[in-house]
Image: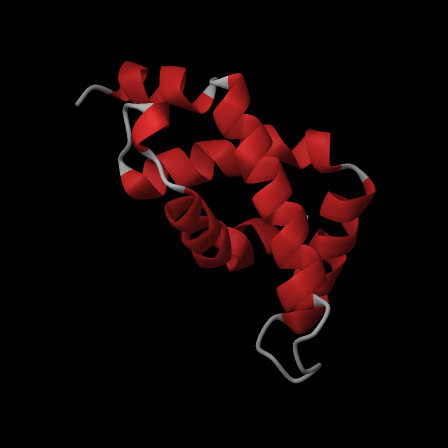
Length: 98
């Protein structure tokens, strides 16, 4: 697989939309409910608030992370479960950059 294939996959509007809703769901259902002593909670919570306030602003960035983590080159082959799990897996990395 070539990097350009992954880049093109990350530009797929349907995939971006799926990642966007997965990110909002993770922010609301997981980060909001986690104990405050969870490692990196403050950063995770700030990032969650930013994502919920403007999900379209973060969807593209997160989609690149999802595609990279999965080494995916076909947006239609990525399942909702893979997207949800990938968003959870990369959340701390992205939460540390804001």
